[in-house]
Length: 449
Image 1 (cartoon, rainbow, N blue to C red):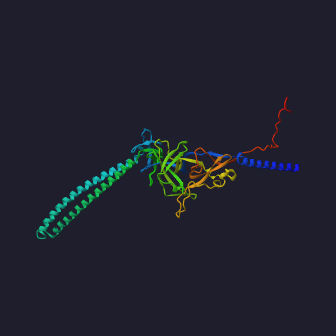
Image 2 (image 1 turned 135 degrees about the vertical axis):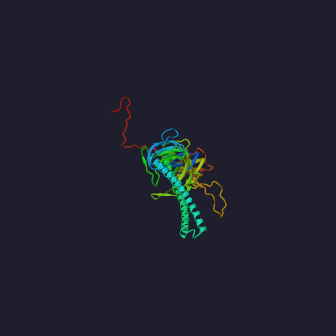
């Protein structure tokens, strides 16, 4: 009998020890054996942007060409009295370069000679017309006397006809003389036009700046011959004003609908690391281009460059500001995607938000036949509570992919939000048989050799 009682007590003790060990192991597995990754809930600014790459361009560029051909013989002086070159500042009307004028000057002299000849022809024709008018006046008087006498014994028929013929010929000669004057005057006008053209071409041999600006490209050298044909050869490229510049950005068709005029922009350039510049969208060009089946649109951005630090044709790394939130609570986006196991959730929450269902933040509304206008997205984040995690329902705002805006009555700045778990390694007391063994030294002497 005593043996049976002892056996029963022993079984009860063993069962109790096993239950205690199982409970401790479960608690150890949920708490001490698992460490939660956390990040602090903090306030900050959130920027949602579209990233693209563009090129800095002068806002207005003037291409200065040559309208006559010839050899470049000299460059002009800029505002600093230096020869015009890359980066030279010039005023409107300043001489940029000079082309050999020899042929143009010869054309001017030839045109001047032709004009003098035409003027002389006009004077000669006028003198001839005066003679013709005098002859006409004499023939007219003779014909008037002949008409009074008529064919008679005093005036033979042949003489009568001769006077009449002389009158008509003299009259016709006057008309010819007047036409000759008109022709000579037309020759004078033509000669004057030829002279004007020759002088104009002579003026074109001096290349002047049409605007005030900065020379960003010089495309000729002294001694180089330029040939003016159907297209005027380009000699200089002048930026009218580099205190304002543009950025031409290629934007993918998937993002272009979120780009609009007056949209703020931030960008950086590799040449100035650590500096961030601002700009504003001014135009979205509608002529799309396709490269390897990718459709892009060119967006023009205007930016300030009064400091003169930005140079034309630098590459700009642009961020179009789509939306911005300031001083909002931000959690890592990974915290909203993480879901714990049921055993990791504090027991009193295991039938609620632990299954991924957020508790309503406001009392339920009466059913309505009209669709609800509440489009707020809801989610759950978890905080550490002892050896478990506790869910907190939140309303989800904007996200940049790394951080997400959240709000809710249970959130406090500075609390630790769980983003995942990291299982810690627990020592089991077993040793690696292949690991080297270290022997403790003997008392009273050195360790054995």
